[in-house]
Amino acid sequence: MECGRPLSRIPCLVLLQLLILGSAAAGVSTADDYDEDVSESIQFNYAWWGQLNLSQGQNVHVSLSALGGLVDFYFLDASGFTEFEYALGHQLRSGFHYYTELSEKDAPSIDKAASIQKDDTYYVVVANFQNVNTVSITGRITATSDGISDSYLVILIEILFAVIVVAVVTLLWKKRKGV
Image: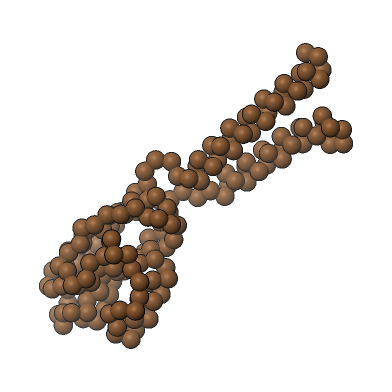
């Protein structure tokens, strides 16, 4: 295809737009739903955690109970979890940040839900810092997506733009040829 004359550049622009659209679609990853039943035992000064790869807009629900005493329930992003690991290694109960809307300290259970605000790796942590006896935890952690994600909206807008470009090119082509 020759791209030298002004009107002959239009098919090149359409081809370029379709290539951009294809690469954008190939780069989109959707958030997976997460559903885990939890049944674990935690010794004194130890913790259990579950890892979740979540996207903005996903709804997380943490419903866990501890049998045998009070524990700390934390919901952390990747950087908070790194801080938590350091604190745990030094037997500290503070010095890390966590999401209070999905956390409880010194509690027998947690049943909270919230919407994720940014794409990240998250951790649900249950720490036994209070009980010299082993504590058993049971429950469920879920994460679900509602509706269309932002990345899909971008793709839909790009598709609409590509359709408009193709329609305009077709009209110009027909007008040029006198059809």
